[in-house]
Image (cartoon, rainbow, N blue to C red; front, side, top):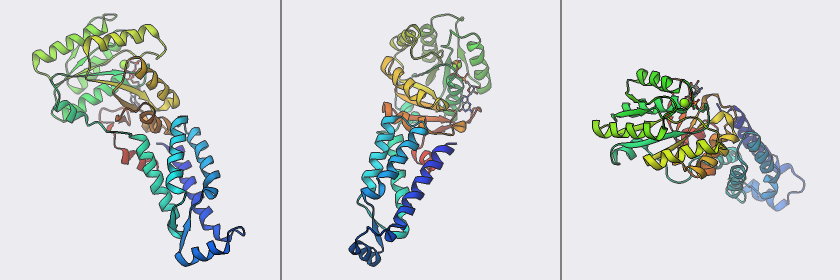
Length: 320
Ligand SMILES: Nc1nc2c(ncn2[C@@H]2O[C@H](COP(=O)(O)OP(=O)(O)OP(=O)(O)O)[C@@H](O)[C@H]2O)c(=O)[nH]1
Ligand SMILES: [Mg+2]
């Protein structure tokens, strides 16, 4: 997971460390600075020391599929925290690592997080969650994983087979529902997706069920008709949470999709799937920063238990 990004950041930290260690050997350094460094045991990180290294870091981030704005912001933040700092000579790498850790945590989780269990417990029943995104990102599987997670937290769930578009989608969801032990409300293929979800909400009201999880068909963010259908689903059912499900393996594309879904339909939170197979890590790092919506879970495999509530510290630890 994230091997490429991990390698690049590690190399950046190493290079800053080396540059600072070899600084005393530089002939251009003034005698006063050398004496000062020898006496205090500290080095001062300067813009001149860091400029080219930060430039390389920026390129490294872009090559790891970090979105442009996010890369700009990360580098600016790191620069701000490093330049001018006085650090003990043998602690430079540790210091740089700490500052990068902080910059990445701020990037990946801007603003308030979202505890979904708490939100559900504090909301009116039934709490309605709609899963949306492009084809094959993992919406249906993720919905079953979320169902399992909520059930483990003593929250009752009913599923809505809102993907009435793709052949086999209803049966696929029924199979997942059987596996996790849940009822799923279905209509025929090609039925109105908004109406299926509406029925599931009515069912939940009648049976006093806490949460409705609604599947929807995958759609390209550029498909006007299908995006209109999604708008209708939202208009009719007024979900409490519109969850964008993005595939981390698609890199920058996932960020672009999220942006477009947010513009067109509005999204409240993100689940990023397949990060178990994501070598680059760029989309995971960029998506929340770019659209300013929290990542609530990440998918780390194909099993129902392979869902992790998003934790920024865990995430950044796995990069650094
Ligand atoms: N490795 C890995 N695979 C995943 C993860 N989440 C989903 N998948 C796999 O991705 C594939 C597609 O998953 P689906 O849930 O059918 O995706 P979808 O978005 O519902 O697809 P459509 O309904 O066709 O748009 C399946 O093979 C899943 O097992 C994950 O976190 N990690
Ligand atoms: Mg699906």
